[in-house]
Length: 173
Image (cartoon, rainbow, N blue to C red):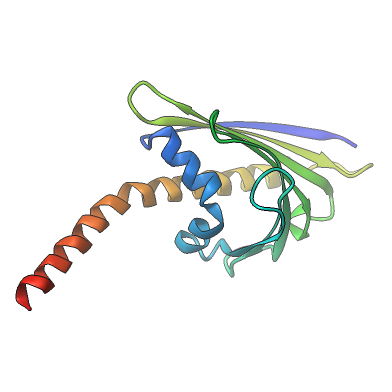
């Protein structure tokens, strides 16, 4: 069985703790909300969200895949790290045994963060991994992270607008 490791670092203006909460802790509800074409919903099959939790992702209509089963391998909310593996599903494309992801969110001096991700693709015995397909998957992961970042940047202004609109309604009543 061969493996390919892919490292990615994405800078963000979002504070590290806020990004970790959105990307890891709130992902079950947040990602289907902001990217329903990519992820339709996520079910917890077993566990409470911590280590050992098994989740089933149902991909949206914009995806070439139907589902993927994830297992949480490690979760450290103090150090903003999270590791999980895709263990089943058509996202493994019949050529991978699993894919393991190690995510670390690092605060930066400017108040933002750097999102580090190491992906390890474990091929089935005798199968060559198509690195172009892996690169496509990594680009989709980067797009998802950027969508979360955009959502987090817009949320406060939308809340202010909502409160302003509410004030207008109350003052007109």
